[in-house]
Picture 1 (cartoon, rainbow, N blue to C red):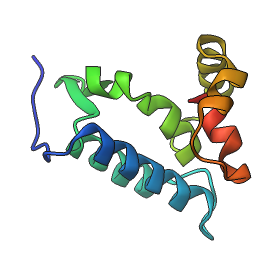
Picture 2: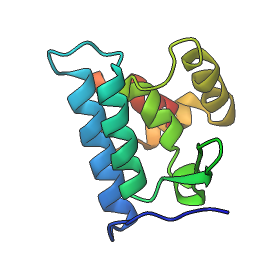
Picture 3: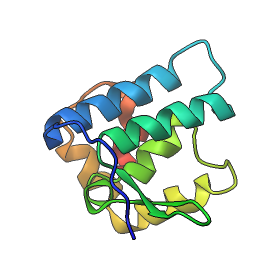
Picture 4: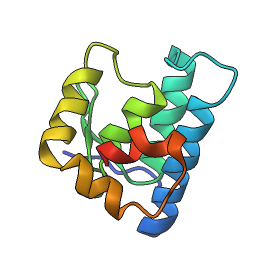
Length: 123
């Protein structure tokens, strides 16, 4: 019952780079961090285009994360983009924090920029 949409051909490294750019744009722009409806729609369209979200049902219209989206932790990126309901954010962060060790993630992180430590600690 899954209906596919046009998916651009990007490799995982390009998708990750694009997600990182989207996060940086949301975190460090002059706009409010928590996204409005229009921004959420634009981000959702982009995630569908990148093959990270797919339609799961037509009536009612429902969406789900694709296997690639799960592999790349797209839900965590969405938290940092501010497009997740704010009351769900602590639950998502707790889930990712419990599944990875913060110290091993930071020590293996090739990005030494201190502003990114919170983000990369959750990855």
